[in-house]
Structure formats: C-alpha cells, structure tokens
Amino acid sequence: MIRRLGDLAGAMRRYRGLTSVGTPREELLALQRRRLLQTARHAAAASPIYRELYRGIELAEDLDVRALPVVTKAMLMERFDEWVTDRRLRRTEVEAHLERVRSDELYLGEYRCMPTGGTTGRKGIFVYDRDEWRRCLTAFLRWSELTGVRPRFGHRMRIATVGATSPLHMTARFAMSVDLGVYSLRQIDARTPIGEIVAALDEHRPEQLVAYPSMASLLAIEQLEGRLRISPRVVCTSSEVRTEEMTANIRAAWAVDPFDLYGTTESLYAGDCEHHQGMHVFEDLGLMEVLDEHDEPVPDGVIGAKLLITSFIKRTQPVLRYEISDMVARTTAPCPCGRPLARMVSLEGRSDDVLHMRGADGRMIAVHPLTLRSPMAAVRELRQYKIVHDGDGVHVLVVLRDAVAAQETQRRIDATLRARLADAGVSDARLEVTIVAELPREQGHSAKFKLIESRIGRDFR
Ligand SMILES: [Zn+2]
Image (cartoon, rainbow, N blue to C red; front, side):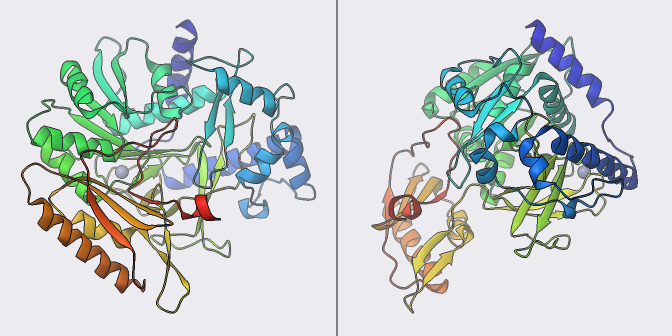
C-alpha cells in the first residue's frame, strides 16, 4: 500500500512536467530530440545488444532517428539476457516468476513483469523497474485527464472495468497500482457470464465504465433492452477495434461519446480528447513512426505498412525503433483542444485477422477484415457476431437481438457475405451462418475479442 502510494505520488509529480494544452509543437519536438538522444546513448552504453547494433553510429546532438536500425520482438526476445541492462535479469527466471505471479508482486523486489501475446504468436516479456512504472503511470494520469476524470483525494469515484483482471495484463496492473482508496474500483473479468456482469454493474453503479469495445457494446444493448440500469458519465474502450455500430450502441444507451484508449506493453500510449477526432499520441513519452513497406515515412492521414515505436520510458529493456504490427495513420494537424500531440486517426488490424482465401484464378487472395465487418455492421438484428475461418471454410456465428425474424436474418447474412466475398474475388466460398445463444470469449489472460479470426495459419502452416 505504501509502495503503491509512493508510485502514484511519484507519477503525479512527473505528470505535472508533461506537455499539455498550449505547449507549442516545436517545444515538444525539441524535447523529443533530447529524450531520443538520451535513450539511444543509454541503450548503447548499458544493453549489449544495442551496443552491437549501434557500433559505428555517431550518437551526436543532431541524431536522426532514421540512422538507427529497426528491431523486432523476435530478435530481442531471442537474446533477452543481452537486451536487458540489469545483469541479474535472466529470461528463464523471469518466465518462472510469470508462472507464479498472482497479484501486484515485484520480481527481485524491483520489477513488474508482464508478457505480451501479440498477433505473431511470439511471446514477449516486458519488465519495469519502479521508476519506469511511475513513468507509465503518468500515461494513466493523462488518460484520466483526457477523459475529464482527475484523481482527487476526497471523492471516491466509482469505476468499473470489464476486461482482463490478471496481473499479467498491463491495464489490470495499472488499476491495481492506483487502487488506493482514491477510487472505488470494481474489476470484472470479461469472461464472466453476461448476467453476472450486469448484476455486478447494477450493484456498483459506476460513474466511469472501462471495457473492451465489444463488451461495452454488448452492455449497451443490455441497457437498451432494460436489463442493465447504470448511468456512467464516462465510457472508455481500449485494446480492440471499435466499430461504428459499437459506438452507436454506446451513444444510444448512455448518451455519451465514448473515449478510446491505446496502450502497448512496449509502452506507446494514446487516447482521444473531448473532441474525439483521433487519439493523441503521448509523444513526450515516446516516438511513433509510421512507415511504408520500404521504410519511408508516409504522409499525414495515410495508413502505413508498419509502426515503429521508441520508448522514452523503458530503460531496463531499451525499446528503440521497435516494430509492432498495428497499421495506423497519424496527423499532426492542430486539434481544437490545443494539445500539440499528434493524433492516430486510423487504426487497422488491431485485433482482426486478414483472411487468406482462394480466388477464381486459383491464387490466394487476402480478404481484409473490413470486407466482412462492414456488411455485418449494417445488420441491426445482431447482438454480437464472430467470424472464424478454418480448414472447413468460413463459420459465421451470430447472436440475435430479442424478437427478430431469425431465419430471414440468417438467410440475408448468408447472401450478403457471399456477395461481398465474390466481389473481393473469392470463388465459391464455403460459408455457413449459425445462430448461437452466446459467444465464448477467447482464452488467455487478456480475453480480447476478435470479430474476425483466421485459424488457417495456426493449423495449416
Ligand atoms: Zn484534442
């Protein structure tokens, strides 16, 4: 408790020094250049891998980030023991700690350790010492500020989260770190049966609701159909793509514009402000580069092929020009709120998979998740859906809202999806639409929900 109080107080002190409304963008960019140089010099001095990678590169005042080589999770994890700057940290021992951890425990009395799954299926391990963790908490404080919820001593704001509750998940760990009696916090596991979630929320009466978008949308429908009776002032979603229809459900249920938060365990953070015109990237805590397939920066508003992140927070495991799989577009155009932070204006492929299907000429065609997502969005009779592509074909599982014409809806979905796949060049798609009572959430510590999932790669490659 005292440790957590110290962490939060430390974060609040640091937070006051962060870029805010009215800071000129030039000032922010100058700060970024200073922090990049410090981070690169630290990495070259203290991490054997980076020392090797940066050999021959002059880390001078005018350092251009593009002079530094790109790194990937695979190459760093392969040589974890040489990546970290504390020689006591060994991958096998940290993995053993991860097997055991049940609460907000520190490894070697110092490190919070968290794994990342990631779309490539390769596990990453991230460790934060106490000072790094305080810097992470500043991101949490900024999210609070963006959504208009400041931690105030004296008022115990009621917050409910429906998501991951395992300490292996960063957002749950954040919540544990700030659970000091400042908030009245109720954490509900997203895999709990929906009836129990509704009952828990009705009892807690949250002023702020934080949930995966698929879950927030489902709860919004519970509210619209009269089973849930809460009135949150603030609704925040994170971790998955939030579709237009999910946003519409949330607005209809609670008359609020939901906020979207973005965070990676590698420590890049973003969140939207009250204008909801894209998520402000926390550029004073890190650098985000959006590149095309030839590693050239893309213009504002164009979705890149890759995203590189450089963290100014991570010192024990330096993260510089680290490639992650999210495909995003960004803009540096001024936001009406006056913050100088660039915004992520489009986020694709965050959780849905691209499907690989046979085309008319026999070649494999990549079917973008939007091909199926947009027609499904137009089906008002749906409560939820999930599309799985495996060796037997495309399985469309749908949960219908109350009192709708089931067979007619099923036929319409079948016909529409076949037509869209044919438009995309797929010949003779094997597809079936099945009505189910509920959808299981994925196993694993985060229980994120994929609307569109390919199981071809896993089973057949
Ligand atoms: Zn703004």
